[in-house]
Image (cartoon, rainbow, N blue to C red; front, side, top):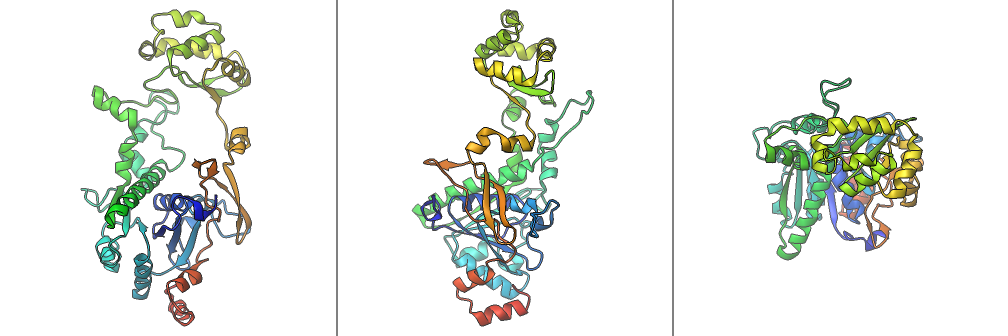
Length: 404
């Protein structure tokens, strides 16, 4: 699908955010067809450009930066200088959306806060992403994914129980809170664009990492709110479903995700333990949860007798959900991942080409991933400033002064 025919074609986004949550939101909007201009500091750019190794061979780009900046145009502007502030205001005046993740109040001194830019562009949708929101006892604090995973409760639920070997809190292997915040922010932007269609007026979106982390505690939050009991870490086990966990096999590990009682009956048949499904302690999911300490060792002993591939084939044949625990090389070799085009290779201005993870959204069978690589630092400064009427002479003066 060409950019011109994508859902957000014609929408202009000014992305002055950096690191992950804001850029992830911007990349999502770019994938959907929006024109996204990424404003970065001259010389150093987005912090994540330096978060390596690894680096893309033949370039100065870190893998971290590459994960969140597909489909954008990079413009370098020093917003600490009045001339830089004027440029950003010009860009904002022509934009539909602005993304920022500065500390609360941090942009006011530059005249780049929502109130100031709303006066220039009443239709602007201004999305602020912070650690704790615009109004909070913690509003002044910086917000980092790792810290918010801890404060927001997910690390109390992730990892093995304290009494087991290797027990203790564990963070997610990716920046879980940042990514969810980027996705929530993109949803909020889309809703605001829809509302503006009718009102003609923009708005200020207030996204907080802490709010999002609490918001995605999902069933675990409701387990607590419903029962008053604080959930504990269960390793790879599920608090509400049994068996729904990882098991050791004769040659490795696999997961079993039995979601209902009929699946449990078929699971027991494959294990040659049909009597377990008739045992009143295990016949229903509620009973299996209550008696997991009696059931799980029986399942562990049976599953240890055959290889992972043997079990996977047997469970697949009867419709019992199960799967291998893949390393990333096996993930990208997986037939599903290849068939769905989840590895995307794009031309790159320095390296020749770059491999990326495609956007998983498809509309009418077409991938929504942008088809231009993450930009090199300042790659589009001249072009973008020319488009807003900055002459060659003015651009040269700005460059000499270190503004761009």
